[in-house]
Length: 95
Length: 95
DNA sequence: CGGGATCCTGCCTGATACTG
DNA sequence: CAGTATCAGGCAGGATCCCG
Image (tube, rainbow over all chains, first blue to last red; front, side):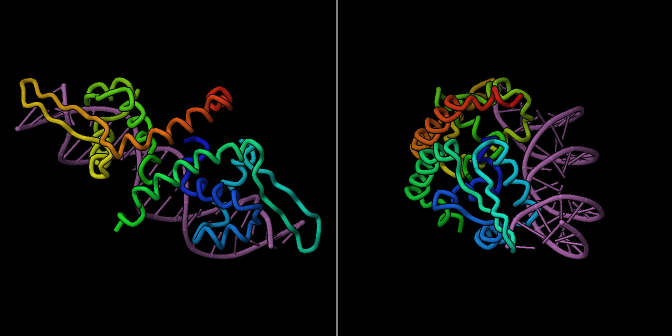
């Protein structure tokens, strides 16, 4: 829970299972996340070796986030949670 | 995450995998949880049909919490998280 | 484009005391 | 024993502005 328990952390990682993402992409997909929070969460995940931060020195700047091997091993957990969510249709019950 | 994402919720459910528990037992096991918070979390889990609340009308009063079938289906998620925690020894790395 | 710095706020949570 | 009531605080998170 320390790793994936944050309000946004879960969604950030989930997006990365579909492939690398850029800072701006996260801002669009994670509707409403502030740059401050996104920045903090990404930094934390990087420190925990869950994601990689790759910088392409171009103009304009280009930074890409991707899952590390450690991050990839989280997939079974996400799959289990996804199945559970489907089985009980949690979101729909939220009214 | 809405279901198990709370600070204490995860631990409450985990304890219930080992069998029913009483209010007082949770207070001892979950070191430091306040009765207020415990009460709120238990009520939430009951509303979400994750746990059962069974009252034994005796003196002194006796209330027992146990997992519902829905709650039981969370087990694979907990197993997956447990394995991941063991594999990466998360707690030990916490300094 | 990808963030850092600052300021501010609400809600979650803890502490404590009390009751059926 | 199993909670509820009340009060107070901290910290995650949002809003905004700015810079390399």
